[in-house]
Length: 252
Image: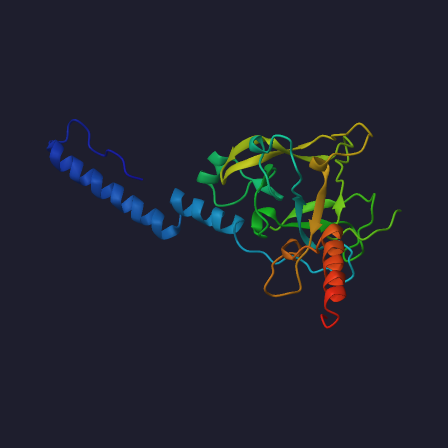
């Protein structure tokens, strides 16, 4: 570490002392750079790990299994004041403390959570479902843990579910109208709070999907699958085709 080694008794010009100090500082800098200890190097490694592309588990039977790698996605839904909220599909993400992120190349846990406008599986939004029996199907009502990579039967893969906090029994919610300025930019607040409508049913901000990978190589997640046409669209297509056949029987 560079420091002033010269006392007032040493008869050395200030200009020469400054040169020696600069040389010591440069040696210190080069040594840290060689060992990868510079703050910018640590920061880069942490960001590379959190943004590293991940491969989600592929659900062949429609179930989510313990040990699967999934994303938690709060699907887009219409809002009355759309300009005041963070729109689109929001994925649950790990959010490191911004100061610690500049000082360390490792993610310190526990850390914060947020919801970001992304559907691409990376290190910060990919979680592993953990229970005692790995590989078994995860059932509705069962407790489980979400690990960093980073009863009622039903197929939960890519279907909307409610995720409750074990100790408070409150639902995981994405508050699209409350913004966070995170290490990665503008994102939405995530909290444990159940939002009920007039029928005592959870609102869309409490709806999450355990998103799995897509078996097609050109698509990364099941969210990327093209959505089937709506019932009205299919009915319109059938009516149009029937009309065309009535006018011209040769139309297939």
